[in-house]
Length: 533
Image (cartoon, rainbow, N blue to C red; front, side, top):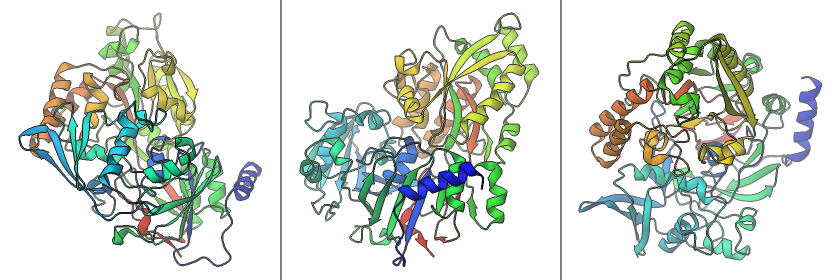
């Protein structure tokens, strides 16, 4: 351990709560995140899916929960949460009839009810509501933008309507977490105060929030799903953006689990007896490219050239094979991949030919600036990775510069119009993104999803793609959905909507004391089955 790592570990030791001399049954699991700051704890976590991983699903339930315990050989599915059922109205595909789980208590002891569901939906969708959350609501609305109305039919039933036929709605109800209206009133009716003393219905209860340092959660022994009452006594999460700092904290025993160890440290961690987990999950790390006028990426040939310019295998070697090459949003083995005609390899000659055909060359090089982050959820090691890519671009005559920002700045930018000030005038955003549900492509590539409505930041516009995606989400036939999505994805690949780079393999390292962890193909983790030896 060098001096910098030692000091980092010492600083962490000063900020984390001390373990008791004799741990209780189940023990305490201490985790170092990649985030530079703690995610918000009030039921709409920021910091992307890492925020949901640690401060979303452990202390809260969604209307529909992720199934994180079964089928690790395939992407995670969904399971009833605080909605026990969800059924489209046979006479009106815009209307969904949802059953409300009965007998559930919030952590503060108040009852979870259908009225609480309406109150939580007002937090996100009703700008005139006194408890509308102007700061956090856009995090949910950017993905769940299709909900139109919501009403309580009776104490056991909520009726949702969508703006257009949307068969994938249950998958997106995983984004809407339920918090306690009673606790909100008790802390003074402000979301800032609620975030310091929050209350949900989840398997863990937040008991301590130390801003910038750590959040402490304890077992909810009264959790409604008896199979998921946590084995752990306590879960503590801390932000730690630097990979070297996280490794130092793990080696010194200050934490038990770290996200994204530095790739070159993995062999020595294994040799020292630490567990290193790698597992595929629905992740992609692209450049979202501005496809509008005044951007060089408006020309499909330039976007294709960029995809042929990069050495994905070399980049994965740099990462010690903790990622695999990406040639689309989905991996080729996915049923949604389709049959594109473009097969992107490292082919600098093809890249140069495409640039020449587009009117670029040594005397007129492509010049663009890409927003990149210093760290963040699913971002792996963004600085050295982008430096590697910059060399690939230079080799074919592309002058690509970087706008380096903090992760939170990037999350705001990708939900903004590319011409908005939040996008800094950049021509691309290098942001880790998910493909966790079948509606993913609609959010990323449909014209209806142009930012700031949704996540099509670059305003990629192909009418055939939009039509196919609309047909897929209007269908309730899984085989028809898959066929339509595969056709759309093939066009997205051929049109090079993004620069497709790599899929992360979700590396994390942990002490051998961590028992019961089973990796699944998800951005999220079921901490309820874990204990400490």
